[in-house]
Amino acid sequence: MVHPPRPPPPPKDKKHPNRRMNSKKAVERSAYFARREAARVLRQVLQGDARRRATASIKSLIYGPSVRNKKATFALVCQTLKYLPLVKDVLARTKLLTCKWQKQEELIFVTAYDVLFGQDIAMTGDVEKFLMLHKDALQTALAQLCLTQKVKYVEDLLLKNQNPVISKPRYVRVNTLKMDVESAIQEIGKTNKVTKDDMVPDMLVLPSGVDLHDHPLVKNGSMFLQGKASSMVAVALSPKPGWKVLDGCAAPGNKTIHLAALMKGKGNIIACELHKERVKVLEDTIRRSGATNVDIVHGDFLDIDPKDPLFAKVRAILLDPSCSGSGISAKRLDHLLPSYSKGHDVDTATSQRVKKLAAFQRKALAHALSFPDVERLVYSTCSIYQTENEDVIKSVLPLARSLNFELATPFPQWPRRGLPVFEGSELVLRTDPTEDMEGFFIALFVRKKSTNSSGKMMKKKIRESSSCSTMKNHRKRKRLMTYPFCRMSRMWSYRALARQIPTER
Image 1 (cartoon, rainbow, N blue to C red):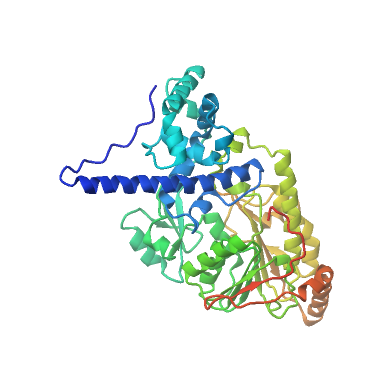
Image 2: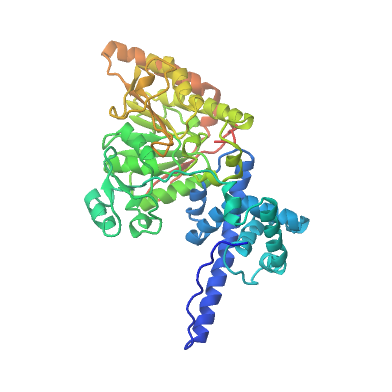
């Protein structure tokens, strides 16, 4: 049986044996911690996948601030997931995953991958010592598995568990708050072929496979790794410099800071996020971008009173609510997850979850339409499901029209439009996960300019709509308090959030 090729050993340093020994210890120590970081990420990913509940993507979990050795951790997580069916089968054959080790199941998976297919393992931890003592049994079980499946090579076993993934170009958005596009092209062009995107003005296109995670311009916030479809959302809203803008479900913050760049750092953006951990990610994104016109609200978008003086003058809203993420499964590396190999059909659990998400999305969109001074509103998802897209728009159209909103066409030159399930569906935009590499949905509402008499009637309807949506929670909102956060941004923390929040959001 032929195993995957191992990397060549480092050259021996005969003159400096101590240096060579110290270097080996440093590598072993780094691998020890990388396995544990990978196991923590793997636990989150597998638990979310088992519940059919989207956690953050694999990349988001790894490239967040909590993981130190990002490159090694990313490689370990991806390779462990790739080989996971084989690792589980081998462990089952050897009966090594006993009750004693089940609490460290993910670390067992990661370390077993390293023992069977990865690098040499040093006896530096209890799990490593345990699996190295049974290395012969693991390798024997793998050989038996190949015989049972009538294959000669491990790679042939992998082919039975893998799904084809389409390669795609690498998109990167220039943060014009820190750097102009031409300077970015010159700098990136020193090592890579780079072109401007033909639709998003601050977006660059690089060849597939280019890794920019460790590039200095990415680390210092001069550029952000963001897909083209995702970047089209803020451009569709196109807020003017000096406006007050509300980002209803802001984390991780890429669209928030894109808005800040489009507004040239002028005006004010209020970024609302419910979950504490995602607020930290949002805060980090804003800090790296250098945006000084963003305030963070830690609370539920649905609990914001449109008549509150802090929000009454909002002129544009970007609403990108929690969704199934079905349009970015390739970007999220979902093809590596155990559930992916079971098929792409929407199962009962997924269908129920999508319905719950759509119920929240309808509430959020209706709430966004009730802000009295809003002129432009973008609703977007990274979902391919009609339930979360056209059906949500269709359900709020009567309310939108009563408040003098109409659907407008973002990116008129874009060829792919909404499913024909309501009149005007050709005005909304879809991107295709196969052809465009991401499956996004974008709908733009624009408020029509009205005469004085119709304007008074419209404001009356807005007040009535706002009153209906806020009456039940009026007493709760009286207890909401604001707190200063930092010089760069303020974060308002909402106390007494009595509403039960769906766990999917």
